[in-house]
Amino acid sequence: MSVRVEPLTGAVYPPNERSNHVQWLESAPESPHIKLARIIATSQSADEDELRDKILDRAATLGADAVVMGKSDVLESVGSGTAPQSTMGPAGGSSGGWWPFYYDRWSFAQGSVDKTSLTEYLSGTAIRYLNDKQ
Image 1: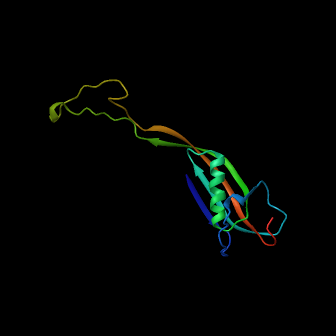
Image 2: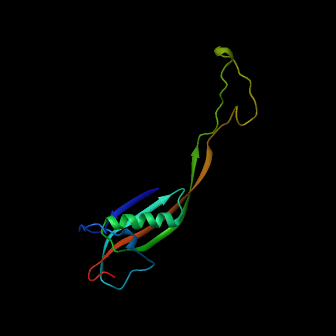
Image 3: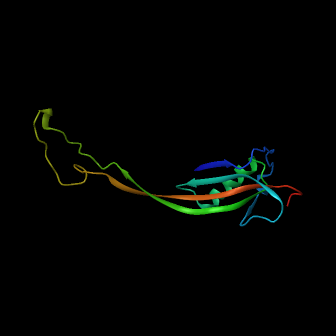
């Protein structure tokens, strides 16, 4: 799992001691607040709840009172991996010698193999209320 923080202010606040009290909001509140940072969590194995918890924990360390939900998505990437290569060499190591050629995927393959991976993506904006805490 990866968590990235993009600061939106130069101000520094003490950590929120009670990270379980950092709110998760679907939209920005009407109360006056300052945006502290954009927090992005990604993982190929965690679900959205785990990503949200990581974002809330990180927001608490920044002194946030709440996190306004940002983008949520599942990213699909296709990359090339290594195809199985022949493990058979020239017979006896002789130069110019040919080795047995079998038509199966373990003894000979050409080109790359496409791999598809899914990455869960979730972002939010950590905020701190300016007046009384909500």
